[in-house]
Image 1 (cartoon, rainbow, N blue to C red):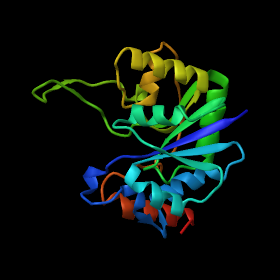
Image 2: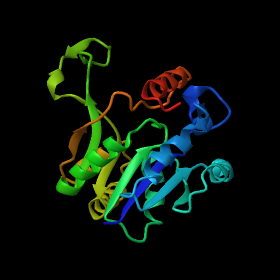
Image 3: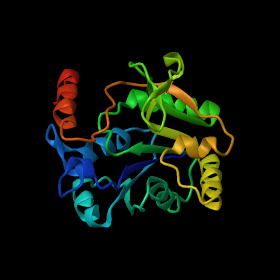
Image 4: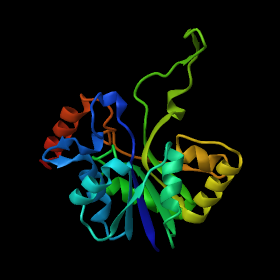
Length: 225
């Protein structure tokens, strides 16, 4: 098996209201992007790591991450385009592992569990059951329905796919002139099933400034600070 992890770090982080990439924020003495990459680069199951970043961040990312198995690719204007840029650089691969660089607290256990499921079924994504009651609203924001919470999962990353399956799904999306914000949805549109794997509520996405102290608290509870 040859497995490639694609770490997406090309977002603008506009909700952070800052003039630099949120990937460069520090959590417990390491940047967000360092922690995200290290989770995968340290695993024997991962043969190669591709970090997708903005052109303006590539030099500083490369200074921070010097592992010889890590390469860098400039991202596109959307998530799908960024993954596509990484796919174009992959010579050989059995499974592609797509992860948000903004999820630096992912555990290797979650990665392994999701990879195992993908190898059995072709496509899998880590996620957690929702804790809150979810409501469907109409255009006026009036409540229009209440889905069964037992059937709802909040999907995270990593999302892992048979590489040939993912390439076919990507080609179909491009041919249909569609641009999806979720890799599972891209594969679903091909007609393939994607299986959810129970993950961790701690696998938070760094989105706003309040997520930084929360992430540090989680690391402290794990004893990783």
